Image (cartoon, rainbow, N blue to C red; front, side, top):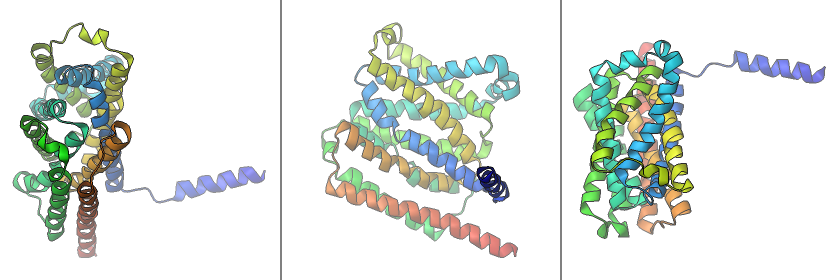
Length: 320
């Protein structure tokens, strides 16, 4: 009896608790997506031991698309996937995102997981300025300061990485193009709001279709995937389901509730977690300058979030 009363009291507390705002939910969803994406670099490095970058990135999206099509047969009309696939911006944004993924895998194949973690995550520096140009968002002093601190941190992390002098220059350029593609996608997505489930699933199908010719022409995609060992397939399945299907849905749903600048600074989580996983799982050791750079990135992240909190507080005071 006592247990039942305690359960009812706990249930009442949960029911009467204030609901989190859409903005808070958006932050949680984007953070969850970024944490999943931070594991991509290690999983990709494992997959690249067994296949080329064209096939790996295509297999990642092909499996996701196959699962989506399985959902679309019974529920497609209700989710609206077909309708979303008729919209030009689904394919336009899909192309921007697809080339970002393609550049990332090509660049990582020429460098390392740590290099890919660092250089393909420079979007946080690019997004606030693209948001000013394309969305008319206003840069505050906090945003400029946060960007400057983050840039210095990324310079320490990347500029003092001993492996940079040994890896291919082409790999670095491809990873930088990855950052630009992700930044451009994040900003353009704010214009078209691909937050609905149907939009998220449709863009994965579009990315798969865009990547297919590259896998066939440059990757020699055919029966080779059937000969991959279990470790390679584990990498592909992990990349396809949690890191693609789940993460993209979380990211697009969350992005609709937060600003592009906020998404930029949350993107920095991928660097910190990705570097840590590269250290633990692949033995890629961080030097003292990289540790200093990671600390500066955290400070930049916190400064960027402070900018949003201050802006929200100012708006609330103006409305009183």
